[in-house]
Amino acid sequence: MKKFLFALGLTTAMALPAYAQAREVTFTTQLSDYGGDGAYLALYLTDDDGKYHGTLWIAGEKSKYYKHLRDWARGSGLSQAEYDGLTGASVTSGRTLKVTLELEDALIDSGYQVRVDTSVEDMRDNRADVVAPLTTEGSGKTVSGRGYVHSFVYTLK
Image (cartoon, rainbow, N blue to C red):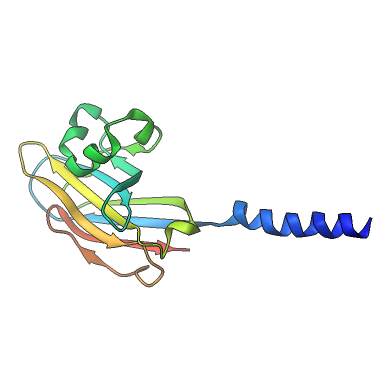
């Protein structure tokens, strides 16, 4: 009986961390004052080779415009399964998008990057407006965007 209880305890100790290893991460994207319509944004993860890994959030409700978020669109294949339940309104000039999600610990400090693609109607599309390594060290550090994004920061809890 002692061997059984020991084996059960060991198995439980090894299995529980697999379920508990997630972190709350808040992504804050501040847009510049660009003088146009609301922006569509795709927040997504890529691996260390830049290959698409998964969608974190899509800002903009009309899916017919998602093709303008080009790198994300190519990686996700524009599959509704990739963004279903992960969407919200577009973000207007000068405003902030704040999204809090649970991410697996295995994604942090493993070479993954957070990317933000942006697009505004009748204006330029920006592939990789933001690229930020998903690291413990990068938590809380502001990254400047190269298009409509003024600043981007993520915070690990």
